[in-house]
Structure formats: C-alpha cells, structure tokens
Image (cartoon, rainbow, N blue to C red; front, top):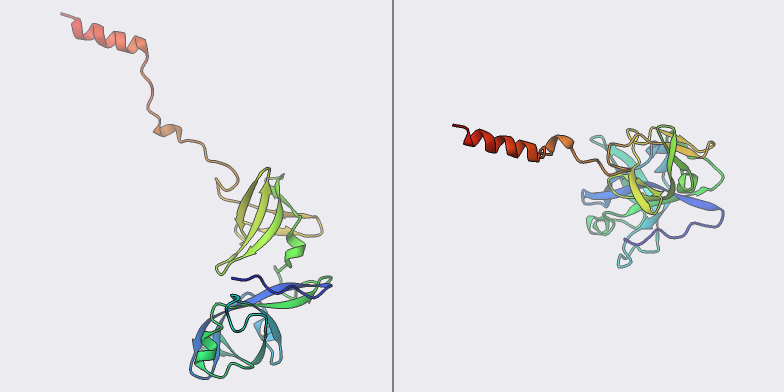
Length: 210
C-alpha cells in the first residue's frame, strides 16, 4: 500500500480505522476500529486521509463521514460520494487517518502519536536494551521497531509485552517473551553425553573376561 499523505505542517497523523467490508447495497462499510472513541471520531462531517494503493480511484482524495451507526454490534459508516455497494468495494482495506496537532495528546487512554514513541529508550528488567526508531502500523496490530546494536527487533505493541509507556521519562517498559531480544541457548537436556576413552577400555575388558 502507498504511504499516507503527508500531514500538514505542525500536525501529525493518527490512524483511527480500517475499512473491512461492504455492508448492504447503499454504500455502507464496516470498520475495524483503532480508536477508543469511535462515536467521537466518526461524527458526520469528519474527514479522513486515506491510505490506499496508488491505483485506487480514491488515492489522494479525502473521505468524509455522512453517517455512523452500530449494526449488530459492528461499527458501520456511510461516506460522502459512496452511494452504492460497488463504490464501497473500492474502499475495502483502506486505512483512515486524521490530522492531529503535534503538541496535543490523544483523546484515548493508552494511545500515543508515532512521534511521541520514536526515540524512547526500551527498558527490560531495569536495563536499556534498545531504542524505538519507528512504528509500523499493520492491519492486525502495531509494531515498535527497536534498534538493538546493529539489528532491528519487531516488538508487538500490546499491553502484555509493552505494559508501560513513559513519554515524560523517555522510555517504554517491555516484558518480552524469551528469544525476542536474544537467541535462546541450546537445550542441554537434548545433548548426548560423550563417552570417554576410559569407558571404551572398560567395555573392552568386560568383553574379553573368561
């Protein structure tokens, strides 16, 4: 996919959702939400920057909410210029971004702008193991890309692995599974003990005894 359009000077962009499936015949689209405040984000008139392939007819165009509702517990939206199912299908897998003031804080708890995370030290068991160099946004989850010496480690940005983000303190606390930041040692239990020359000699004597 193409990268999102560049934010306006003095602003940054926050990913708030992904369009997943056309719903019905009148242009409605189901949304995978990346925000804790969907009713506040998807108000009528709200406009999003689209992350779509360059071949998409929507590339470089904004998308404006006409109506947002919940259908069988699923968030569904109607957008300006999307009048039927065929038009809705053109937007499937598009990612929605909004411009935010770079000096403001996200409205949601446990949400941060990319520029707030990049540059933070990564601390494990009280020791700094690396530094966040970028944030990758994937459909399934976000990843913190951590520079560790000459390597980059992909850390899933989930509460179980990144329980604390301390922007003011300049660090994130990680509790990664074994092997994420280092190679696991070989299991010594799988190693077969070597036989000594003395063992071989004893076996030879046992075999020749009358």
